[in-house]
Image (cartoon, rainbow, N blue to C red; front, side):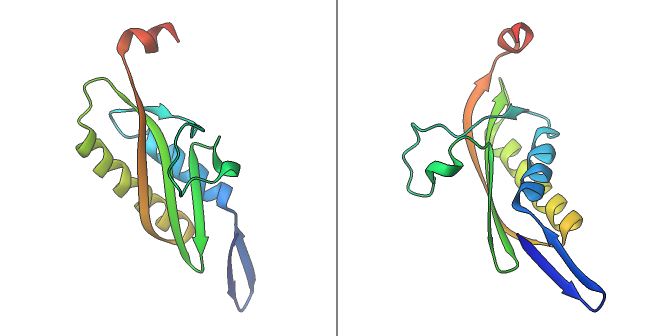
Length: 121
């Protein structure tokens, strides 16, 4: 939880609020089909089992946030371009809405959604 104190009191911002802002912002970017839960099949050392089902993970150290987002992209999306847009948009939204400095927005593309698959869902 991020705590900001001034002369009139304190403000606490939870990781869940930051994760919600990041997730909503990411899904607004053209080419992003949606968020996907982290899967237990990913064996990278940075994923903790407690975070394995959340599509957005936030780590707070002092006044700095590190955000990991697991998402799916639409078929035909240019991954590097979409990723750059998502990273910038998430960083800007979180910093503007919360005042918390975001130093990293790590994206993990979990899959691609094809038009006929999304129409059935």
